[in-house]
Length: 308
Image (cartoon, rainbow, N blue to C red; front, side, top):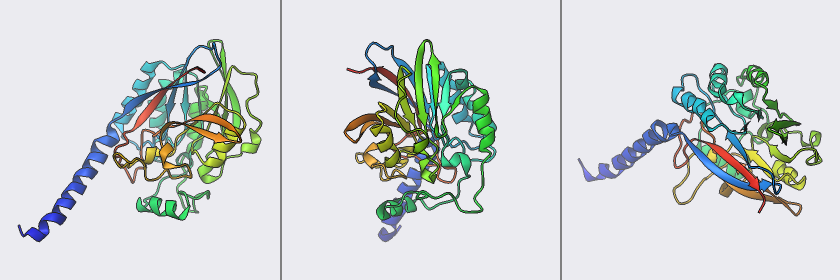
């Protein structure tokens, strides 16, 4: 082989191997993260919360479905689903079947844009371009006319029938063995369906503990929850950056959250108050970009303990 062909062919081979690894192995390498968060009032017993997010179910994803069903073996106190369950108009039955064992536990959910609208083929480089331009994904606008609408009503009906709380721009309370947990949720800020004015005012004070739930961690939402003195906010949406650079981290978050907080536990400060923020990297991908690199799919078992 002529020397001038060796470098480009080598680069091509490395790129092909990377794609094979990220789509064929890492995107299917499901794992559980465990995080302890000191947010409960002193003297309150610990609470074990399982957060699942960004499932992006495509019909036929059997390994993902088996893994989701296995999570019931953790026996959490309650489950929080932070949205984007679908990436296939035919995926609702498989989502409900996969989450069926978890729906035996108390739980609550919010929806993301991909629950409402089907995915479309998109150049991944546009995410970087939008970051440079100060735009974020759909940039707060609903998808254009002609986009496929997912059967989200069927998904909602399944979750509601199981007794999970629908937190779409509203509040709800879970009773767990004598402990009351107040949950305040929002519809997806990524497509401007959030209506914080409908839930503003902070925790009611009637529950033992309160927390905020949202799909996309846009700063306006994090600011509002934090200013209203919620000690903990749970979100998803970012996929942890999905394609992360080793020793550097995420390049994008697909919202206005900084990349340092693309996944995991951090804090957020607004109006002199500070809340814990946990962003799940999620366990799926858009069906048209089925790749993950240095960011394996996940669910998180959060153990909430008393403040130090």
